[in-house]
Image (tube, rainbow, N blue to C red; front, side, top):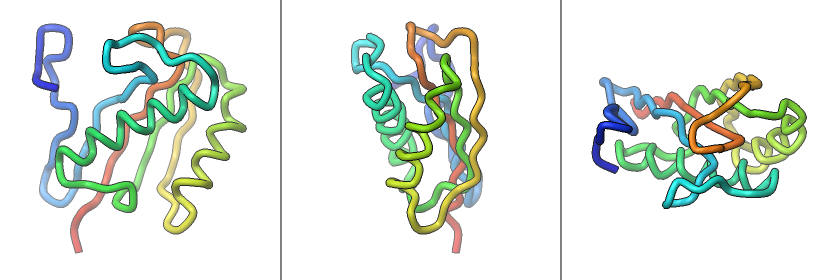
Amino acid sequence: MQPTSDHPYSMAKRAGDFIFVSGALSVDRDFQPVEGRKEALAAALERMTERLATAGGELKDLVKLTYFVTDITLREEANEQFSEHFAEARPARTFLEASNLPYGATVEIDAIAYVGE
């Protein structure tokens, strides 16, 4: 996605050996919210992974994730997702409840990756 007036920032930005990934929402390609708890978590992770890849990163490179959710009870499903996708080297994680997210999303994930030696 190219910067627009609604999205004037980089989706992912490489700085040396680090990649900083902007918050990726649980929305489809038309910015419609993804329904379902596990489906919303999967959509946000997929969007974040796509952004990470644009800067040359992969899931194995992640060192820090921050989850913003509109329902703190998503923690159990997020823990399952986290264990499934990050079974080897687990990145640090913060899990926060937010009162509202853009486009009616229920999940947003931002990330930091390290792609050095």
